[in-house]
Length: 57
Image (tube, rainbow, N blue to C red):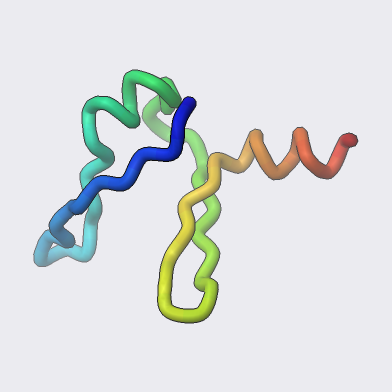
């Protein structure tokens, strides 16, 4: 998947909707865990399975 930058809106409940193009490429499932990393002045969302795969290599 190529790098993809999208702008989203944070809801009053502080929820973020993942863009359709990204959902279709990443295929997340309801209930999956996503880790949120704060790095300087940004947030990074990483599917938990990805961090497990990296730790195994």
